[in-house]
Image 1 (tube, rainbow, N blue to C red):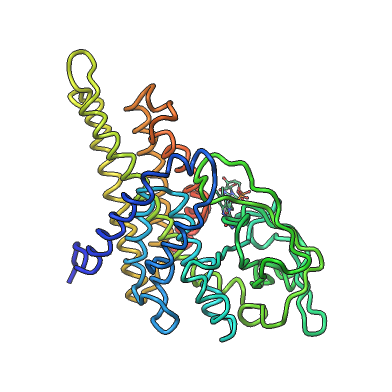
Image 2 (image 1 turned 45 degrees about the horizontal axis):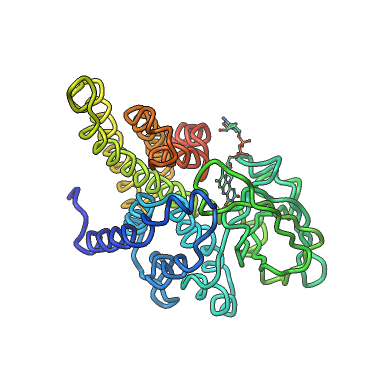
Length: 378
Ligand SMILES: Cc1cc2nc3c(=O)[nH]c(=O)nc-3n(C[C@H](O)[C@H](O)[C@H](O)COP(=O)(O)OP(=O)(O)OC[C@H]3O[C@@H](n4cnc5c(N)ncnc54)[C@H](O)[C@@H]3O)c2cc1C
């Protein structure tokens, strides 16, 4: 039977995260945006609350909660601040999943469990200066020398790169095999041969800083190859759907924040003797924004449900990310128009939503790549 309501435990989670966001994130989000500084203590607190462990099984300290719960968590966090929500997505998914699935028991105890508690920071490093969407053309190379893997090459745009402890890195073990020659390695901060570049100055999602990385004869133990050699791309594909759906959830949260602000402003702002919401041109914008958000939600939670039900959902996950990220950008744009000059002022949140929303069009695949993916599935 089809159900369009959330379980009681999902509603409780939503209310709990909402209270956390109002108490801890909303009061500091403007400062996070201005300074670009990462609030390490707040991040640790999120770990203590079990946010990063939510989708992992109980035996490693997880919440056994599934994709719908993670979407709720990320949607609510993103309604507060996209940078903090993106950091949570990284920590609960791409930055830890490979260690969970392919790491040794020792790596689970020493690295994964502390990461899920927020004591260590994990991240993923795929993009390079000359290769983003086209993972098969990365030039970072991993060569086996005795009982070590030795990495050489550049990475860029690594979220949380400036402060991360654990780097999940895509590198070529077979340079002639395109994306099938890509494998995934775990590299710890402080490993000789790993240099972390300066933070990249950026437009939005500023609390979660990004940086370049350079590997120069960076030697790591054999067990830091995550999975069988030659299985990197296949293993990455296993979480790509979740990455896309959860980026959709971030988009819904940001769109809701922009919509709620715009609705309040439209009721308060008076022009020609009446609240601007009384003008049909403004009220239709609000109606369109609400409709875009609702359709994004339906896509995101349907795809989340498919993950929890163990169904294949490449098309639905790509659609969810496409619809939701485009919706977030359209809603933020409409909010800017409703605010007019005040939208341009740094004193209001609406310009931050507008800037932050651009990131949602990139992480998890651009809209062009998603359309390619959807077309292949038709
Ligand atoms: C704030 C931020 C955080 C990020 N965090 C991370 C991170 O933690 N780790 C990481 O590895 N990367 C990260 N990235 C990088 C992100 O994943 C890439 O930006 C994304 O994959 C796109 O790659 P690109 O920017 O190199 O664009 P390109 O791949 O160079 O694409 C340029 C343009 O060409 C289009 N295009 C490319 N190929 C095709 C095609 N086949 N068909 C149609 N159009 C195409 C694209 O859609 C785009 O419009 C981050 C980026 C940002 C901005």
